[in-house]
Length: 206
Image (cartoon, rainbow, N blue to C red):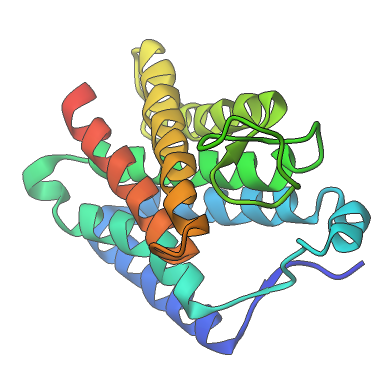
């Protein structure tokens, strides 16, 4: 079974973003992004055979995917001396939630389109499943738990707030996925909007 990998440009950009996260946000920010990356690979590899049969398995991701998912956390890390760390955390929670929803949700029941409210084939943007929705929240909570441990927080309720911010970002991603299916925007722009939503909620929730 082949692992999900980045292409050369994607790997180079990911390395640049990693250095930027370390420079602007410290080792804690870099570790959070590494957790996102590892969790994303695991989620993508899960159910590999079924995804391949459905024609929705992405073995190699490009620099556009790295840019869409990483640019908002990097900007938030750069601005963290002014806006704090929570926008960065919210954006990472959102992209993790979206990854869990899209990669694990396709392995469950037939998705329902948010536009037509009718069943659609698996892998279509702008559609959700109950299991994918649950996994989305779990992905965001994973980041919440990681933040609780890495930053040594004393308020466990912030784990839930991180989960809610990430989950909301993933939901917005699904909503904009409807426009993506209509030819308005791309997967990259939808992912960026997801991260921006998480960042905004991270700023106002904390």
